[in-house]
Each structure stands twice: as C-alpha cells, then as structure tokens.
Image 1 (cartoon, rainbow, N blue to C red):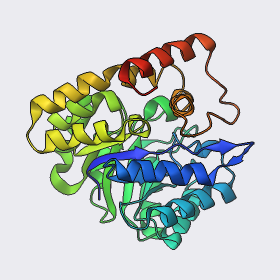
Image 2 (image 1 turned 60 degrees about the horizontal axis):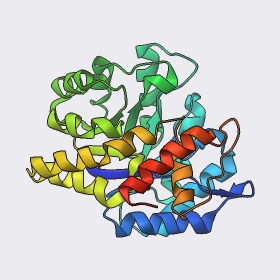
Image 3 (image 1 turned 120 degrees about the vertical axis):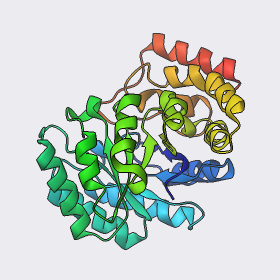
Length: 290
C-alpha cells in the first residue's frame, strides 16, 4: 500500500463548490496512468479551506470513485488532536485504506507532544497511519528519534518526509530499520531519497504527469537506475515550476491549461501572477503538455 507514486490529488472547484465530476475524471486519469495510490484532502487538496462537510464528502467520494483499484490514503490531520481523531474515524467509516496526518501546525508542540498526538490517534482509530512531516508548512520538525518511538505503535506504518533533508531520511531509516516505510514528500528529492531507502513518493507532480512519475519510481525499484535518472531529469523543470508559487496554485493552473479542471482556488490562495503564469506555460509547452 505504501510504495510507488501516490498522488496528492487536487480538489477541483467550480463556482465556489467542489466539482465532483472533475474530481472523478482526475481520479480516472491517475489510475489509467499507473498511479499507485490517491491522497484526497492533503495540502494539495486545499484541506485547510474545506468545510468539515466538504472534507468528509471529498474523502467518501474518492473512496467511491476509486472502487478499491488503488489504496486511498485520506488526509485527516489537524492541529487539534480531537479533530484529527474525528476526521480519521470518518475516513475509516467510509472505507479509506489509510490516513495521512500532518504534524500539528501553529501550536508548535514539543517532540513529546507530537508523540502523544500521533499515539492518541492510533489508539482511537484502528487504521494504518502515515505520519507527515513538513516543517516548512508547520513550524515543527518531527525528529527521527520521535519517529522511531512512533514506529513502535503497530498501526503507524509510514512517514511522508518533507523536511527536504536526505540526511534526515537516512537517520529515520537507521533508527527505524524496516519498522516504518519512508515516502518522499518532495518531488525533486524522490530519486535521492529512494537511493537511501525511501520506497516512493506522495507527489504533486503526478497530478499532471502521472505516468512519468510512476515510471521514475518503478524504474528505481526495478534497478533501472539510468532510466530513473533520465525521468528525474525530464521532470525536473516541472518540479521547479509547480513551486513557482505556493502549492497548489501552480498545479491547479497547470491542470486548467491542460483542460482537465478549473484553476479555481479558495482564499487566501489566489491566482498566479501573470509573470509566473507565463513561465509555467513555457515549461508545460516544452514538456508537450499544452
């Protein structure tokens, strides 16, 4: 369940509401092109501006649309432990295969607080859990020593590591061995992280090039290192372009340019600047996507 190219899928909007038709089409696009799993309601899915009802519905809709063809790893994290438990319970009830829980943001908990937060969710809901560390978003870094403590909890089975540090990935693997699966949380570091032991990626880029992202991960897993390197090099301009501005602004703009979904966002996110939009369009054209 926790290997390969797993897409952090966008939540398409139209006229202020979740566009379920477009979301269903995006899910089919992913599955048809080799994506190994779907993450609804992550950062890329704009979970922070979904109402609780929308959040629950997007997860339920994704489970219904996927029809068990690939795992659904529902984003259920919060900076409130009680809220994270409630969201995770709902994900289990509607049939999600796992849950992805971001470290509590803004509160800036200690390492002991982080440990107790995740342990409380694991004890409350019997569902495989994926830790999500991205200190650039949350202002806290889930340290390898804490990950090792959490790896002793039976249902905590993986971590999406988005610290940007290959060294931190190495330290997690040294501390945890095979008790936890590491997934890259940074598309541009997928290949180097796999080189030190990660098993795949939870990816933004797969929203627009799912076959190439799956191809990179599969090539490395199959020992085709030169092919993996070539795909990394091919996609590198996309890795950069999709972060010209805050994610998911560029990837939603890219999907709109490709005719796959509206580029609509919710405040406080806003459309790309005209200069960055032109830069993004050039990268997409060079790649052959538009």
